[in-house]
Each structure stands twice: as C-alpha cells, then as structure tokens.
Length: 285
Ligand code: PMP
Image 1 (tube, rainbow, N blue to C red):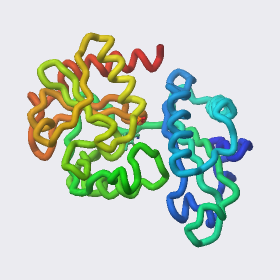
Image 2: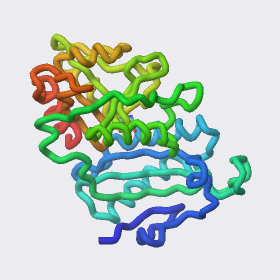
Image 3: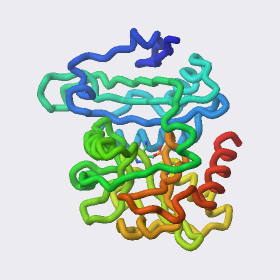
C-alpha cells in the first residue's frame, strides 16, 4: 500500500515526495532527523523528539522553516492520514538545494519531510533470547568533530560500525568513544545491570541523548532501581549481570553476548524483563 508523505506542507503519495539532486541533505548528509514510534495511534514523546530536532538544527545553524507547534500538527496529521495504529515516523529536515560546493548559505529551501511506515526492526524472539553484539573498531564521532548529540543525516560513522557488526554476524555493534569508554551502539543506547543497579554512559561520553534512554531511567527510578550515568569500559560490560539496548525503533532489547563473552547466564535477565514490561505499559499509558 502506498504511504502518504508530508513534504513542505503538502500530503502526497510517497512516489511524488521527491527532493532535488542538488539538496545538500543528499550531497553532504547536511540535515537533521528524528525517528519516533506510534503506539495506539499516538506519537510517543513527540514533544521531546521535536525539542531534540530543533536543538540538532540549531547546532548546525539550520533554521527549520516552521515553529514546533506547526510541526506537531503536521506530524499528527501525517499519522492520521496513514491510519497506522502502531508504526514508525521518520521526520527530516534537509539543508535544501544549493550548488555543488559545500557552502550551506547557498541553500535557500530546507525540505521538511515526514514519512510514516510500519516497523519491525528485530525478530520477536530476539526480545526473549537476546542479541549478540561485538565492539566495533570504529569509534563514535569525536564530539569536537561532529557531536553525537546532533542527530544529523550524516550517519556514516554509525554505518561503518554497523557494517563491521554485520560482517561478524551481529545486528548491532558497540561503539567506544575516543577515550576508549563505552559510548553507545550504532542506533541504540546501552545499559548495564550490576548487582541490581542500573548504569548507562553519561551524555559527555559522546552519545545521542536517547529519548528511550531517558524514559527507561525514569521508569527504573520509579520502580526503585538505583540508576547511574557513569562512564564505563568494555570490561564493565563483559562482567555485567545484564546488558540491554534502548531506542525508539529497538525499544528495550536484551544483549546476551558481547565480543564472544556470555553476559550473566546468557539469557534475558530479570531487570531487563521487568523494565521491558514497564516500558511497554508506559508507551500505551
Ligand atoms: N543512539 C543512536 C546513535 C541512535 O541513532 C538512536 C536512535 N535510533 C539512539 C541512540 C536511541 O535514541 P532514541 O531512544 O531517542 O530513539
């Protein structure tokens, strides 16, 4: 079935939603985006996602040509138009079309695009049995090169790490930062459970400020689990009782093997299971 895409104020069939080959989003990955979930017909944490989008745009000096309230309406309208109870939203803003040179000041027409579709990221059994991941040799972007806080259209750093994971037979890969500390996975944040307490790398480890990460920290805290944002090494991950990943697309997914080390008893742990259940309840609350 053809989806309806929102592009610069118009709702059009997906085939008609096109951008120029001179768009710097295409030529240089110059733009920003968000990935969100629809649960029971509603966009989960839309306000937080849009806040992050405007902050990403600000960081790259890109003016989104409409206020957040209008983008809220446009997103909800696109969700309604596609009549999806559960699904995924990709919202992006490109720099617009310019010349073949880098100068972003020559791009006058940022493209605002909202795509809604079904989602099935990982097979259901992986949520029970857990993932195996490797640590990639590709480090996360140094914040002084391109801050991982910016959710930019330039994902090549993560794609290179993902490729390495896939070549090793893993669907996700762990990325360290330039100091050798644990940062995040290619499209997910990482959590570790040790002796009943929950740890995740801090924002200054050079990670995306994941919305799901924030929700899981809130849920765990409310459930009485001590939570810490603490820098960690690969060693902390290897010797954890439980490891799981979070993301809008991935939700809460257990990891049972890292660089061929079994985590805990090699099965989804009780804290991961509990937080996943609480997360599932929260997204439909
Ligand atoms: N880290 C990276 C690199 C991501 O791309 C994402 C989103 N896919 C996340 C973490 C998770 O962020 P969120 O929970 O906001 O989807």
